[in-house]
Length: 150
Image (cartoon, rainbow, N blue to C red; front, side):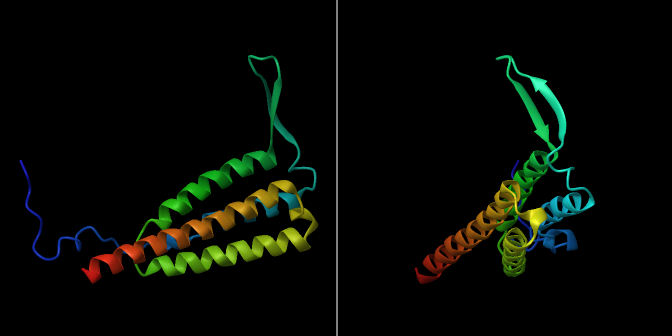
């Protein structure tokens, strides 16, 4: 059975107001966690959490900084999904992502705690977040222009 759409344009019931949590730049949260852990203890980031022997016999160790990188990849996925939203709050997301990238880049260049390859990878994830957000915005704008021009 097919349910009829509500009166109006049909999209008003699907749009949700953005919550304060939707404005949080998760890449910035992960970078902040990295910096806080590095400031608390300089030996905490390279410390091994656990080691597992693989079927090949090779030992695989996971460090704290690598675990934070895993959280960074999950945060990047969340940021990419947030970039797919269309609306006025996407401009705020782009601005916050740019601020996170600039702060990460400055921290990498100027702060010894952040001067590691792991933090550089977090900085590059922040850059990918910006580039993907702009690419989605341009594709959406191009589609809107094509629809409006017909």
